[in-house]
Length: 395
Image (cartoon, rainbow, N blue to C red; front, side, top):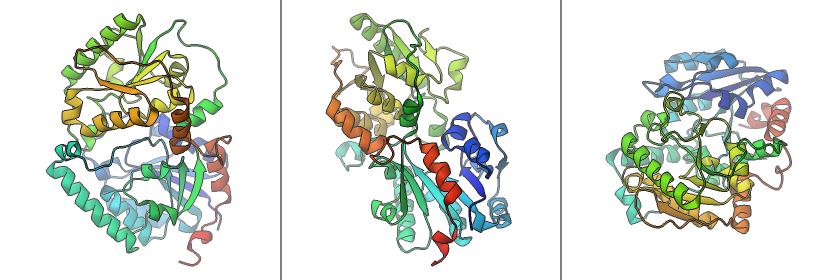
């Protein structure tokens, strides 16, 4: 049976960004019945002030798992595809148990990935906590259940780049290879391909900082992760920015993280220009881009803009994964990194390593099969032609 309904299910409220990135309006315009299922309160006690744009599309919110199960049972399952964008790990085991029980057709997106440090180094052991050890053991149990076919992951996955599968969550590559893989692009790659504008937002040269809202990011609170001090982070990074501006004779502009709602009430960057929803255009014309481990580095890589990565002693102590990613980013892209809280001469380079930027493109942004096609075209075409029985006729 052909698919008539597309249900996007996430443990976050619907945002304008997610509505765009999962093509809800495009699917609706193509004639499909589209719903967004918000499961935030099944997994978290609070939404920590996240944006809620549920007015954009028909949305159902669930607070109990029996409500979610009843909603699944209401569906004509053989005409529905569920797209879950939440990372596959022990937290969503109960959700995937329902998918398995009711033979749901489930798709996942593996994109917007970047290099992450996974090696067991002494530095990584320093970051171990009882909470992380418990999480590791729970995820190992989940992996065992997947391997024994007790619980399903996905029936089809949309992957951007050779390493896009890593964004799916706690799932082994050999399992992913047994699933239907469809090549797509990262969101940033699509945005750049679609953009035909040559107009600069700012009429002068500048250095861009890809903000991550690091001390205030709601995801860190929701996941119960340790974080850096708000006061210390902004004090030290602003001091560093002033040093760079004085040395390089260029102003630093802030590309605000989409969830940085407090920036709209207060300037955390000592009066520097803070712009929302302009990261692509700002990256395109920046002289240099500063970053931690932001996914938005896709933009400067696509535009061959030089990158320089920064971390701090406090990030290394409290958010070790970010610190290790900074080092790996620099190594992967052939650029430099440094501590922004240590007062010494900077090691900034204004050269982009073209070969390593190009390698990164096919590892994390696109593929030879999809680099000239918009993801929304690939995805909508799949929805209009996919057949439920192709996945379940012999199961």
